[in-house]
Structure formats: C-alpha cells, structure tokens
Amino acid sequence: MSGVLKKLAKALSKNEIEIVDLTQTLHPGTPVIQLPPNFAPSAPFSMSEISRYDDRGPAWYWNNLAMGEHTGTHFDAPIHWISGKDLKDGATDTVRPQRFMAPACVIDCSKDAAKDEKFLLTPKHILAWEKEHGTIPKGAWVLMRTDWSKRTDPAKFLNMKEDGPHVPGPNADAVRLLAEERDVNGWGVEAVGTDAGQAFAFEPPFPAHALMHGSNKFGLASLCNLDRLPPTGAMIIAAPLKIQNGSGSPLRVIALVDRSDD
Ligand code: MN
Image (cartoon, rainbow, N blue to C red):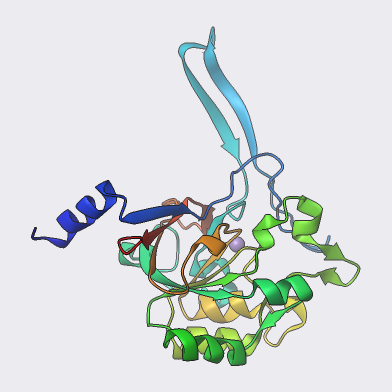
C-alpha cells in the first residue's frame, strides 16, 4: 500500500493505533485557576439550555455556553502572556496549523509529585530522561506526568494553601532549556496551569508562561491520561478553537499511540 495516509487509515482500522483522550470533561464544577483578589477572575464553565425537544425547539437539543478561554483542558496561545503579545502567529486564529500535530515526550514525575506537592522539574531531571530516551526533538510537546489529574476533588486539585498553591511544575531553568535549547512545540501539564503553584516567586515569575510564550511556544493545561502514554512515540493532536485574537481555548486533546507491536 502506498501513501502514508492510506497506511494511517489502515492502521487505525486494524486498531494498530490507540487513540488516548487526554481531555477532562467540561462541567460547571470544572476547577478554574484562582488568582489573588486584586486580579480579575475567569468565569467558570456554565451551560444553559436553549431547547430540548420541547416547545422551544421540538426536534432539537442545544445549549449556550459561557466560560473563560482558560477553562478545563485548554490551550495557551503565545499572546496569552505579555512576552508573546506581538507575535503575529501567536493567537488562536493565527497559529500555524502545522503545529497542531506534534510528537510527545512524556516525563514521568508521578512518584516525585506524590512525595512532594511542590515538586519542581529541573534540567537535571530532563537530562536524566534524555539519557534514557534520547534528546527531546525540535518541535515536540513535552508533557509532565504527575498523576495530578487523579485528584478529582477540586480543592485538592487546586491545592490552595496560605502561601499560594502547592502544585508541581517546572523551574525556570527547565523551561529555558526546553524553550530555547530544545525548541519544543510547547509544554503540557495535568495541573490547572502550566506553571508550578509557587511560580509567582520564580525569576522570571511564571516561567512556563513568560519564557515559553515569549519563545512562541504553546501550553496545555489540565491534561489527563498521561499515564497511558509511552515516554516517546505518541503523536498529539491539539487544535484550539479558531477564536479571533484568542489567547487560548478549551479543546479536545488526543494522542495516537502505536500498538502495532502489541
Ligand atoms: Mn491557560
């Protein structure tokens, strides 16, 4: 059989490729990032019925939706941060669609995060991962597995304490290595945001936003099922809604995993 897409279609039909859904279900209880009270808050997800096979619309069911762009499993576009604000291809409608499909490197930090809720991924961890799995290729997604998505209680998921959230994430040097030296497509996490809970105190503050978006890289937050991905080889499809001048959007993130050897 010739043609890579024909081969792909055949592999899909024979279940040689597993589709893993990395997306959390959106619902009114979906946890939303909490900012200090001096900043404007993001609206939670809400849904109101337009009609449901009734006198408002006898044969159809549909809803109106409201939410912040950064709600649930969502995409951070480069213009989300001030460091990326002038990027011509940095909004949800101007991002080059070639970047919606990219391979994933999954760094398993689940044991570290279980021991330390404020675990920080550093260049040392990335280099150790690369020693085992090879250098992170240019244009790949780097996904931090923490099993944080298994925290189904929103309070435990946000994990807000007196000194701010206790949530794992990358330190500034790790982000710098990925954005500037590895030239990744973006950085994805299971937590509510791409930065560590204490990243407001980092230098620069919020490096997974400031450095990644300043380098025209993307973010993915509130991912799940990262424990079902291999360390390398999965292909991620992550295409945000085409919102004019959007800073991000909820989206369905799926991974293609090669099962042809199983
Ligand atoms: Mn976001």
